[in-house]
Length: 159
Image 1 (tube, rainbow, N blue to C red):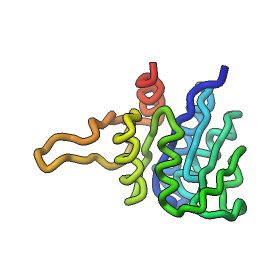
Image 2: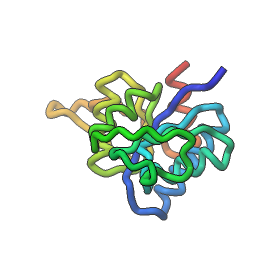
Image 3: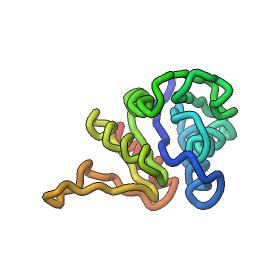
């Protein structure tokens, strides 16, 4: 039986630094635990998580914004050409049982909101936190301090 599909989301650049190292580690750890990794399929965190998963023998699904398969990370097993631009963010998080946000820019924030709206567990590693005007956190964040912690919390939220 295959494990869960877990989305790893985050900014499309830069290609180096601690956030990329964390994304690569998260992808690898998810693969080691039998999860399939799904991303937005481009560079930055998406590429790093995909690379980590593939290096650990895992499966990777890339949902890209355009229709040109060559734009996808080379580490993807399956490329879904959405042709809907950033609206593909909904497809990424809706296809996942849980979401791990590593770092992030505005697109990541939209994915966090969409995943929360769909009731997916969202784990934040070096990522956004959101508070309502009343000061309540929305979504109730699951904060992680390391790649290992993020994977444990995401998979633990599914049991």
